[in-house]
Image (cartoon, rainbow, N blue to C red; front, side, top):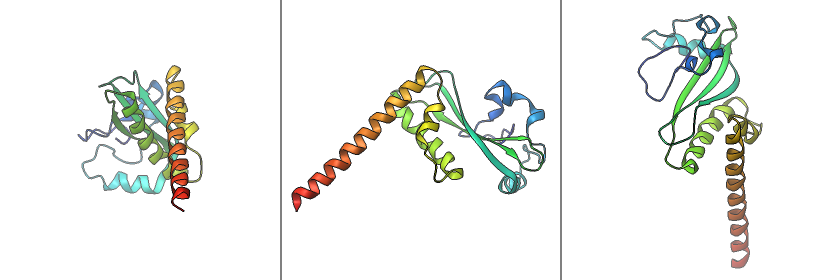
Length: 161
């Protein structure tokens, strides 16, 4: 969802609900009518004036059926107001299924603006408290499995020679 707009798309959520910092409509970009039916005005405005700042993950728990919102927070280069482009991520029954969804969506959004920068530390920092440790352990496990598979592929190839 963009700004404080609500147009019925289930996957996108208004990020102004994320935290007190983003609830104040006066801090949002006022250059265009975000609630307009014709999205061409705000799409054009985003393409020309959106400057990415950071990602924000809003959640109370990572348990199944909980609300998890990922927001790409930025600002307008014309007025300086905040612009948020967000999406809702549906938590799965298993955390091992939820974390890859969060990683994939956050990584896609991050890499759009930071092609050459590492994302793993950013991913871990999206979480709070103990969840950061869980995210780091999950990421370490994923990296270890990938390294083991790559090593196994190299060894299998060497065996064929």
